[in-house]
Image 1 (cartoon, rainbow, N blue to C red):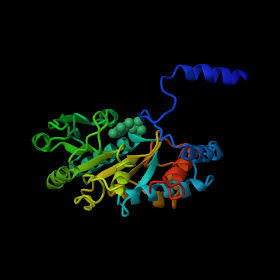
Image 2: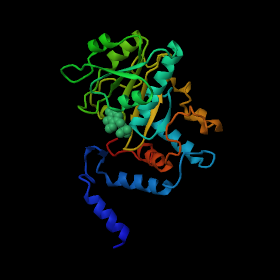
Image 3: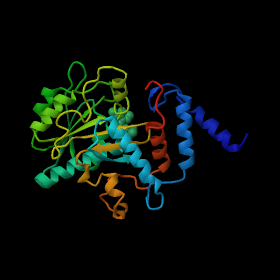
Image 4: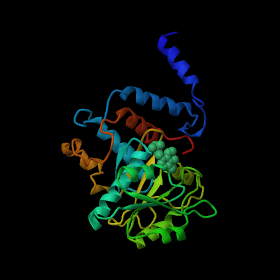
Length: 297
Ligand SMILES: Cc1ncc(COP(=O)(O)O)c(C=O)c1O
């Protein structure tokens, strides 16, 4: 046995969970065919990155593929987006654009606030902290869903963003997106729906004939460009997408980026990590795109 195998074997023994159909930490389907496709894609592109699409031209091709599929799945054909390294990065981008939009409207003298139920993922608090914002939590109802009355009581002039989940991380309950979108519209506040878990699960439940409460771009209120909410979703661990209606202003659109080299060096480029692995993006396009479709569909 090679020394490297011995080290890897020993290290693997430290982990409690290495494989299996487990829907947390990793999102293993247990489908060997899917895994083989993902591994083949990752292996072929593992040493390429998304730093410069004029060198790795396939980066734009694959990013467009992933976004195209994701937007279709969420009925957001008119939206734009970017490939990210997962939930936290996507959330940070959403909070950033809400802060910038608040600054544009009200100047920089007040500290903008993120308003979210207690069940929201901790990455919102982290984003608010990084971006010099406050976060305020509101209550949940008896079914552990965001409480609309509690939200209405908490909203004020400093609210830059309302954030809710579809579904949330600790309990898996879906917040009342439609009702909260109405409040957001009424109060002229941006809304972010964290579909990190649900973005790639709920649409398939719907296709299987399950009743799924509305949570995606079909919800009315998502169509107002000025107050456009943002939604983002995550695919398999380690990569995801940020998709929104007002992202064009923020330079979030992969199509616009592909036309301008300036975006490579711009501080306002719509992602955090610059030299992202192209392997993950390719892997994501092959397992989530039109090429590999689960047998049930
Ligand atoms: C609902 C929800 N939002 C956000 C995140 C953060 O995503 P990531 O771990 O990819 O940064 C998670 C992670 O599991 C999540 O479940």
